[in-house]
Length: 81
Image (cartoon, rainbow, N blue to C red; front, side, top):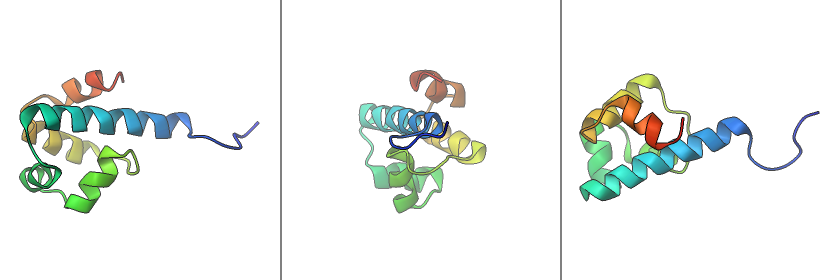
């Protein structure tokens, strides 16, 4: 039976990943704009990624990990994925 309300499991995964990216950004003292610039991602798209509104491509996840001085797998682990 399809879900009527609430976020899907996929949406929840995106929110968890966005929260992990945001948390690491905070630890490094980076603004959202600085992270987006360093990763080569549009700032408004970066905000949507952090809020779990956009599905992150593997290439963008790798760019973000590099900009956050970590491995892509670190972000996934921190997100509980």
